[in-house]
Amino acid sequence: MNFIKQKDQAILTAKKIWGRFSRLSLRDRSMVVGAIILVLILIANLGGSENISESTTSGVREVRVASIAELSSHSLPLSLLGTVTSRNEATIRAEASGKIVGVYKKLGDYAEAGAVIAEFENSTERAQLLQAQGAYEAAKAQQDIASINSGTTGTSLVEAKTQALNTIFSAYGALDDAIRTKTDPAFRNPQTREAKFLITISDAKLVITLEEKRIAIEEMLRARNEINKTLTTNSDLSTQLSTVESEARYIRDYLDDLNFALSRAIADTNASTGTIEGLKVSSGIARNTVSGTLSTVTISRNALSASTGAEQIANKNYNDQGSGSITDAGLKSALGNLRAAESRLAKTIVRSPISGTINSLSIKTGDFISPFTEIAVVSNNGALEVLAYATEDDAASLSVGNSVSLEKNVTGVITRIAPALDPRTKKIEVRIGITSGTGALINGQSVRANIKRINTKTTSSSKDIQIPISALKMTPTGALVFTVNTENLLESHIVTLGALLGNDIVITGGITRDMEIVIDARGLKEGMEVTVTK
Image (cartoon, rainbow, N blue to C red; front, side, top):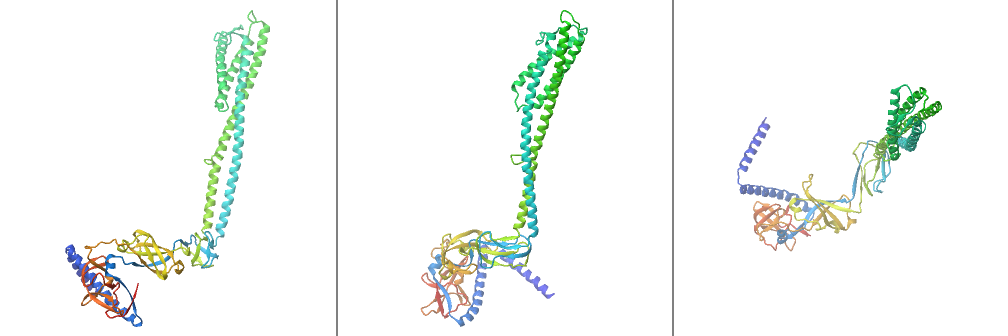
């Protein structure tokens, strides 16, 4: 209960403090924040002093110094801690789950791009692939058969069209002969609109019917002759055959009427008995010819219709354009199943996506692996770079192309600076390419990078002296900085503090621009023996 009351009281107190802080002016808020930062520096220095003083019992402390002019102009190299990494590196993760039945590479082996590193148990996937291959080959064979059938039906249709065209031409000849040659002697002026039936019969109505039909047939024959002049195998022959079939039926009916009239003919001065008998024979022959022609036209029309339907079916089964047919659809479906089976099998075979050295291998034969489990890391250890992160303020003083010095006399240059903060580190990524001494680095190791930077910061006055906050030590007697004398002993100098400028602070008194001070004052005290390093 007491704990809850204390917690509530602490929350209430915090709210009161925040309320008072929010009512302060902008200047007063800045002063409060500066005071808090100085207190934190004092605490850090005091805490660090104890730790360092213990460590110095076993050796001399190493310190770095820089002139006030260098610090104020921000020409001092920026020191960042980075990680050596490969410019070409791939982390391989499992795409399937199952038991590892084979590991074909060892840690440190070189693997070419596409080389098999390990394999899952995949007998099922191999069987499915075999089935898919069989289905694809069957679909391909079906397409080949359809192609042959399409070619055959295409040839048959061409032949049927040619036959239909010949039938139309021959039908016209047969009908013309039946009318104008064999039966027209029974008329006067038969090929004009004044055609008159010469044979005497007792049925006047039948005579009129014969004369009208003969005039209509003449117009029909003339029209057919003109149409036939324009017909080719590309014409609508099916429709033309149907028209010829109707015309042949009409002429057949006419000849039936003529034969009936001749059977009732009366010999007179217009036509003797011999003439009438001759006309009967000719008319009968003409009637038989027209009936035969009608049968031929009907057969040709049916054959053309059958060939056209067969070609349409063949085109549905096969299309030489590669799409829109049943066999094309079946082949694509089979190919899709084949690709899916190949993909499933490929996921059970772990391959290296790049050429490089296997720097990590976390599986062995018999392991059961789940999807997305890390299996290996393959890197090109001969192409290394350093990955570091800088704050926004520090990144503003960096530029692509800046020279970098690393440990073991390794040198480099900034190759890339990220345009935004990394969401994980809340800092800006800096990549450093190695220009010399690559052999001294190991992929994955941590290194200190000293980067030459450009002066992009401005101060309130060109005469202001600025130093990093880390060079300042807060003591009960005031703020001070350290210099190193000729005997490598630290000497303290009380300074007067000015405004805070990010990670720097303005010094208004106590030091001069030509002085060299220790950059990091944490854990130091006056009189301590040190070793100066660059």
